[in-house]
Length: 413
Image 1 (cartoon, rainbow, N blue to C red):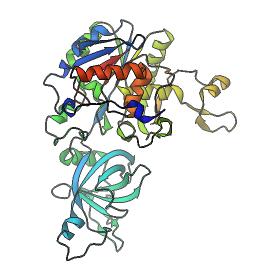
Image 2 (cartoon, one colour; image 1 turned 180 degrees about the vertical axis):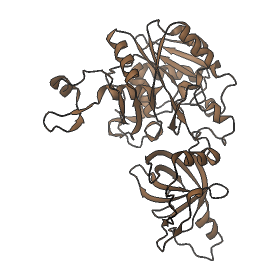
Image 3 (cartoon, rainbow, N blue to C red; image 1 turned 90 degrees about the vertical axis):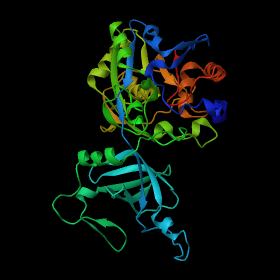
Image 4 (tube, rainbow, N blue to C red; image 1 turned 45 degrees about the vertical axis):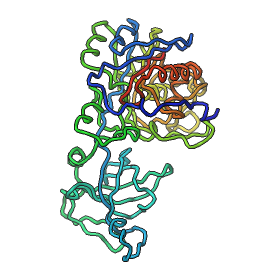
């Protein structure tokens, strides 16, 4: 299957640059995956489109201001002639860092994307904030071009730099700061990580609007955008209809927005993202499935979390006694949880869904419109049928729907 099979033409002016004044004012394109028919509606009608016995599943992750602007420390940089007028800017020039995933808490290390990436090597120091409130050191490179950096906030920093350019803390008895202190600094100096197709700087309003109204668990560097349309009023109408809801968590990172660089879909490798499903949520989801009720996912991140949790379990393996993932065949053979059963727990999901995938849990999906040739579009095509979805996208373009994060949405049934 070719990645180019998932291309479509989108005029640039249809990419939404600002959110609507009314969250629930978006348009909604309803797609019937069985017939291929579609219908132009508005999101305010969404509660009435749900079946009375549906289970609606939300991703309650919370976006944090993960984009940092700063400067280079000047060490471990490539050699530039001191006579070069650009030397000072080159060594201490402006940098941009997008934090994508915390690797460990102590020391506080993160995976991140860095611009300009090629010039910044392992061992270089980076400073963020007008008063250098955050300082970090580049510790390594990742397979996707990301960097691994270690933070030491200014409040806890009483250190020096050794002859190799590495930061060492003085023994002041305090060590690394708490995550609360670290995120306090991030909240002050960080910027909302708007995607690159929104061609403007973030604003104060984005801190509210690039966030779902039900966001709880901090950890995402991009919003689960299907949820941006919901308001307290819409949620109240859903509950008034007696429709059951449940929340799970997947922290959006590289796995959601990384581009596809291969020609064949099957060769793409998805980056892992952290997820968590509570015992209560798993029980509700499995009960709905056992009763033959439809599970409606709000957003592609919710789909990938549910399907991953249904297809991967950690149980003592009969042959080794150690924990490892069962295949679906092994689960049935060894009495592990049955096919499609969602297991509670936390972990890292890397399930790549594209046409041909057999869905275990999800029966319908509310989602925004996605980039051409993206893994998110491939997931939607897997559920709704590639021809159906691309035809619906062509209709949305012709009818001038608003696309991407701050755009309109579609319901795939």
